Image 1 (cartoon, helix red, strand yellow):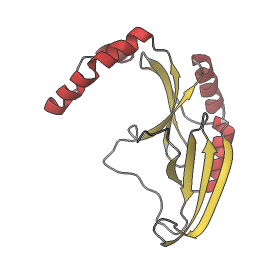
Image 2 (cartoon, rainbow, N blue to C red; image 1 turned 30 degrees about the vertical axis):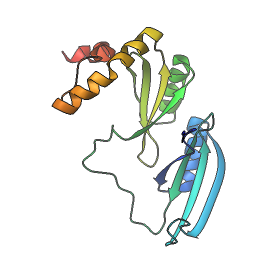
Image 3 (tube, rainbow, N blue to C red; image 1 turned 135 degrees about the vertical axis):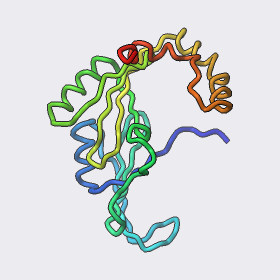
Length: 180
């Protein structure tokens, strides 16, 4: 078996219309499909839902479920808000900066750009509280080769020590320099 691609990634939303409108307005995604049922097809459970699908580019689909009969959305209280996020690639650093300015003009709080050396990112939240990241790649072939060469040793060291290996610390030297 070979995985061809991710068909879609689904998250929960508070309000399907608000969510679709937000992604169309702020991230220029196209609204491509809506499915609604009174029963869940896989489990047959009686649980009405609205399932909406947005085009995230190049065959990638972001989907949301509105579940009116379920308790209010929550999140894992033991996982920091920065961990679970959806990252979308944009075409350039200029587009990243333009998008940041547009989001801020719309009253959306934006963190960044954060310099990860191989890419730069901005971070913000959608109306459901899902953290989003926009990424502009800037890696060189040498950087990617250096990271590829240390991925297994880093994973092995982490598995043994549960401490951050320093094989790729060069990636965030500039970003974290101010903390020293």
